[in-house]
Amino acid sequence: MSRVGAAWVRIGRMKTQNCLFGWACACALLTIVGCGKKGEGEAIASVNGESIARKAYFDHLERKQVVQVQTPRGPADAQVVGSLGLQAMQDLINRRLLLQMAAQENVMPQKVDIDKELAYQTKRRPDFVSYLTDKGLTIDMIREDLKFDIARERLLTKGVSVTAADVELYIKENPKEFMEPAQAQLLYIVVSSPAKRAQVEKELSSGQNFQVLATRYSEAPQARETGGMFPETRITSMPKKLQAIVQATPELKMTSWQQDGKNWVKFFVQKKQGEKPIPMDDTKKEFVRRQLAMQQGQRANDLGKRLNDMLTQGKINVSVPYLKGPWDKAVERARAASNQPTNAPSAG
Image (cartoon, helix red, strand yellow):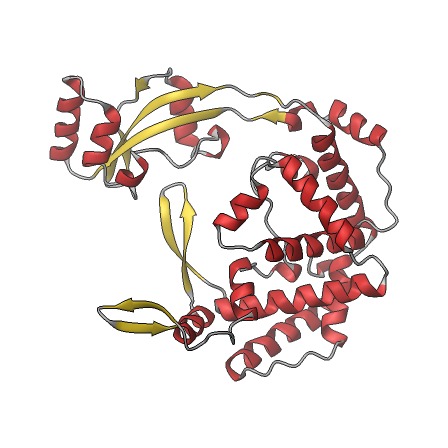
């Protein structure tokens, strides 16, 4: 699949911020670090009458090295590269460098540009703002992120032209990229003992509701909170073995027990939907045009190398002692990469 296609199949998901030089984003933490000095003495919670100060909260976040991530099997712990504080500082420095470059090249977004982009993103996804505000962002944070996105896109696509005719031709020549993927809504029960498996099977045979049993017996993460719902609905994103099982199982039918390591799993197919063409409107076509332009821009404008040069040649001082050492090492890696153009870090 082309890079445009890979971007397109994610059109229904919230766009995430790209990071320079392969460093991970910590969007929420950017805001926390940026405003950490305000109200540091305030309490964020109390435990049996003992307060937890906001400063302790910030300090813990900056040094946090293990986070929870969502996986097809539910939440799981993941090791952070460095710390969240280091990643947040890297993100902020990278963003500042990119905006400085945009100002130097006279492509810095203005208020009217951000207004238009906000309207466009809301057309793509009507709950664009509410989705982000529910995650703790304010409208000012959202607008700042859009400003960064616009600046990056303008730098990347400077001198690149993609017409409406180019978009129509691309859609015509790549029909598979503009299909809604096959979906399946699954319930599942995970048990680790033969006795529990036999109990579940007995109650299923007597006509008990599958979802009720999933909330009662399943050992899957958050089974009670989700009602036994399997976290992935896109069939092609499911494990290969499960894909074959889902394809072979009709709607409203159960699978046999499947062994998964020491556990046993049974699925119930609530609903299935085959792939179908995505209706293309002007908003979707504009998304395709942007992706094509950025794909061409990545070949024509080596934004990663230019930003890497700004990083290594700029005057960047890190004043926090426990961040200075890791930062210096990151800069040394960037300098080494700048001497190897073919391996220069990507901006996207």
